[in-house]
Each structure stands twice: as C-alpha cells, then as structure tokens.
Amino acid sequence: MRPVYMVSGGITKFAKSTPKKDFRYMAKESFDQAMADVPNLSLDQIDGSVIAYFSDHFTRQLMAGIMVQDYLGLTPKPSKRVESGGATGGMCFQTAWEAIASGRMNVCAAVGFETMSHVNTWKGNEFIALASDVNFDYPVGGFYTGYYAMMVRRHMHEFGTTERQLAAVSVKNHGNALHNPYAQFPAELTIEDVLNSEMVADPLKRLDICVMSDGAATAILASEEMAFRLTDKPILISGVGTGTDAMRLSDRPSREVILLDHERAEDYKDLKYPGVHSFRGGRVAAKEAYKMAGIENPIEQLDFVELHDAFTSSEIQTYEDLGLCKYGDGGKFVESGAANVNGKMPVNPSGGLLACGHPVGATGLMQSVFALWQLQGTIGQHFGGDDTLQINNAKRGLIHSHAGTGTYITCSILERGF
Amino acid sequence: MNEKKPLPVKMEEVEQGCVLYNIDPIVMKYHYEVDYIHSYAQDSPFFEGLAKGELKGSKCTKCGGTFATPRSHCMTCGAETEWMQLPLQGKVHTYTTCYFGGQEFLAETPFTLIMVEWPGVDTLFLSRLIGVAPEDVKIGMDIQAKFKRLSQFKPTDVYFVPVG
Image 1 (cartoon, chains in turn purple, brown):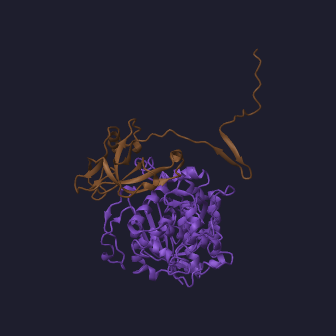
Image 2: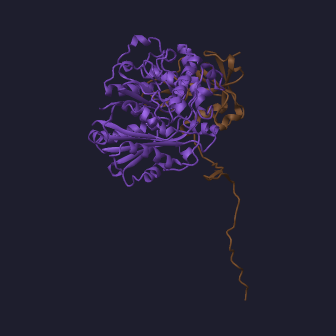
Image 3: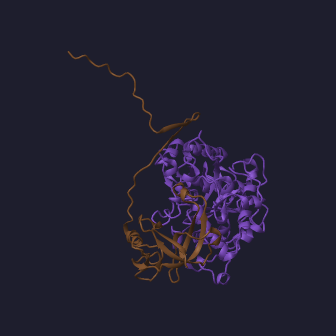
C-alpha cells in the first residue's frame, strides 16, 4: 500500500429540495468546486472515479452513477458505483482510497449525491426502512426512528443516559451550523426547545432527528507525488477502518467488549456487548483505523471528529464506540461540553447531519470536505469569512460514516501532510 | 372506388395520471406501483408456524447457538440450524412508541414496538406490544404472545400483550 492524500473537496449547499438542479448538476457543482481549489489539476489527469448514492428508490434512475461520470466528462475512464446504506459516502471515500493505495490510480474523484425530495417525508421514511429485513423487521415497524428509539431506550436503561443529554447534542450541532453556510438547518436552540419538540418515537423527538436532503459532495484523492504537485496543503489519509454488524437489530449478540488500546477489560466487567445499545461495527472500524494511523488514545491524539449523527442518540453512542469516553459515559461527555467547538474533543463542528442535512450518498464525503478545510485551516475562507468553527491548529481528525442500525461503518483518519 | 379516409393530422392527446406540479423548472408528479412477488423461501416455516399459533426460532446443530429470529445458518459458526420452539412468554428487552412512521404504517400510529428476550435464547425478536399505555411499558415486563386468527403470513401475525 502506498500513502494516499486528499487534495481538495467540494459540496453543494444541502437543501430540502433542489428542483432546478438534478443529481448530475449537483454532482458537477461539487466537483467543480473541488477542481477550483486545485487549479493545477486538469480533467485528463484524473484517472477515474467512484460514484455513490444510496437509494435507487429515490433516484428512480438505475445506473445514475454512470450518468454522473458522463456529465463530469470522465468517460471513458474507469468508474464504479458504491452503495452501503447510510455509510455510502464514507465507503465511496475509502474505495477511492483503495484505488490510489493499490497503485491502480494516481488521482481519483469520489463523488456522492442523494436526491430525497422526490417523495414526501413519510414515503421517504418508508424507502429508508426498506433497508431493514423485509421478512422480519420492515413489516413490523418500518421506521428507522423507531429502531433507534429502541436502541437509545436500552442505552438509557444500561447507563442512565437522559433525554436532556440527547437534547444537548441537538443544541450543540444546530448551534455550530449557524456559522456554516452549507448547512440546511442552522438554529439557535435551547434544551427545552428540543425536549418540547414533537415526539416521533419515544424518546426521540423532531429535533433529535436529521432531515431529508438533496445534495452532492466530492473528494479528490491523489498519490503522494501527485498530491504535492497539486497543492501545498495536502491532507494525508493515515488510517481507514470498516466494520459491520448483523442486519437485524434482534441478531446482535451479547459478548465481551472489543477493547481499544487505552481500555481495560475491568472497565466493562458486567457489560453485555454490543446488545442493542452499542455499535460493534463502529468499534471495529475505529480500531482498524487507529491501528493504521498509530493512534493509541484517540482523545489525546485527535483534534476533532465529524461523525454520523442521524440521531442525537447515535452521536452519544458513537463517542463510546470511538473510545472518546468509556461505554456508558457518552451522555456525560456531551453534557460536560467536551464535544463543543472549544471543548476537549470538538465533535461535529460543522453541525453534523442533524444541522447540515443528510443527502445519504453525499454525507460521508461532506464530512471529508469539512475535515479537509479544518486541517488546511481554510474554514474561514470557505465559510464566507466566518472562521468561528475553525479549530485552532487542527492537525488530525476522524470522519465516521454509518449505515442502517450499525450495519456498515467506516472510520477514516485525516491529518496534515504539510 | 372507395373514398380514401383522410389521415389524421393531429396527434391524439390523452390525459393520464400525470400532473404538472410546477413550471420553471417543469416538475411532474405521477403515481407508480407494482405487484411484486416475494418468497419467504427458507424462512417459510416460521410464517406457517405463526398461522398455527407457534413461535419458531433457530438452534445451531453444531455450536448450539440459539436465535429468537430465525436464520437457516448460524451467524457464529456457519453450520445449518434446526427449528426450535420458543416459549410464548417472554420479557421486554427494550421498547418505543412510534407516533409517526413510514407511509405504509402511518395509519397504524401510535404503535408500540418491542424487542422480546427469552432467558437462554441468545438473540431477540422484534414485535408489537398492545394493551399497555406508552407510559406504562417497562423494560423487563413479562409479556405473552398472541396470534391473529386470520393469518396474513406476516411477522405481525404474532404480537404481545402483558401477562395477567
């Protein structure tokens, strides 16, 4: 394997609906923004692409991937579509990483999109729920918020996590997004606003849940030689990890915690793991990525995290999977302010999925773009002069993309290569 | 000599369930629906069991692992499983009441989802709980399986109610 760098990225402003631009146009818009940041890169230097979107139901156009490749002017070069549910964007990023790491390509474009506005919110929820076992799960509940509500209910039972702690995630992420011009749903909220928002699936309320979006994002990855030729601020992808778990929530076993380097078995003597309260796939993804990047204690060795907060509860669960705190301490972690932009470990400084939106195939790539800008120190430059969200001297960050009830999870570690 | 009928000079116009939703840009709205043929295949005996008032899980023939939601091969060792009768009484492992849902289920809201656990069975089973107010559902609550008399051959042919 050889080192792989991210050299630039682009995103569209995520929105509830973009009737004036179809998926090809949005993908092109994000691609052009990425190209504009590396003026030395010409189209003919790109060796191929990976193009990602989650749902053929939303698109209602099979082989939409090749339509993007065609529209970007990348035919007849190699390309493939990648799909991994909610982790589609993160998996697209890692597939492009593989193309460079293997030596097959020197420059590869990772492009993701989703257009969810073609159906109403409740039909959209039905489409998403088809990503649960259609024999046993979909016909009973058919609703992802319901599945996540059951998981967090058990988390509350095991660890004493509270609805106020969930609400704190919503307040933080929507608040961060006030300074992110790409965000779909910036808002100044109080804990009470979140607690008083409409109940969707007990204990998850409207403001605990991300919204449906249209949008696209692009990441351009390159070999070391090309990266330093294209930019003076290349970002090294120093670790990648991918984990999985059983499709059905009901099939999650009760075993021992998979430990990270800085944890001890005594920390979790009586904890049945992962049960339905934790994401074993997230832990495995983190462990693999940390090993590759040489990270032994993530809270000390990472400067920020962009993680998949489709629900406030999954942000809390993911702190624990990533080892930012012990299993069970996620609620206290957010409550303490540790995850704030100026905290010990800023989590979702961009506003995350809750506030930026979640156009599924674009989401994991959106995280890579925000991470790139953080590490290059160009948040202000890209956010219309507002650098409130710029983390001082950010050297290394983690992006985390997550599917289903924790079925596919990717973690990638990005760090300054300059 | 027969007089030639004049050929039509105008394309016949039809109105079919397609609605112009918006202009600039032009947005169309139409309905689509299909008849889809789905086989329960190796899971069929589970649904047949529900029709007979039986709840069937799986037991691995090699490592002895047990699954409350059936699967024909063991997720731990890969060996074939055999069918195993589950007790009709279990406990609530976790729960939620859904006030919204996917469009197909919106009309049924609010409904309470539960994961059911049985002592000695390694995994759980997703079902619905009825006959309890949302605020009265508790983790660890004893519950009893009931079966629909008119079987739909769906997993909702079984549901749970509080014991006693």
